[in-house]
Image (tube, rainbow, N blue to C red):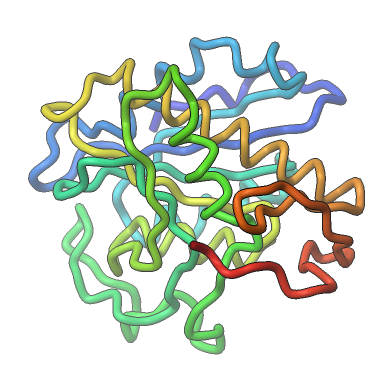
Length: 240
């Protein structure tokens, strides 16, 4: 489907953002609308990055082939997948993804073999990105009209499946965001919230790469040393 992969390559860090095309019940996918608007914004200038966007087919086989391929081609500093939730009235930041339970058919009427992503994969993989901190920052942003929450249930469909694929590649640089439908918020409002979340995620990844991680303890920011794989050496405070 649509992408800007042909954009001129340079030495800037890459942020790779995907949305999904239409599927049953969503003839206009809000994630596609938001990602397409995001590509027209000024995120590249603000962060000094190369923004690469792509709209994925709602097909397991297509996604399983495409996502690992993009990781190899782009070597992204950060990958964010965006999907639509028909029931959400907020921006939803997914903290983890599942390997099994994919019994819902895709646009081709197919499901993964044995309903799994990878036969030998871990049941659950969590992103090392602190979604509670991202949610807190988005909720404090005066330019954002959408509330923002953290979730641990991406839904056992293409969203969950796609997120798992990226977490296998690098759990320290992978995120998934569910957006509400366009009858609840405008594409512009969704995109503004999405851009704010992506900025905060990128800054968190930069902090990780610099050897420190900013965390929130009792409402105050503090700094933890991190390992090379992005995991904190000391256990950080639980999400409030």
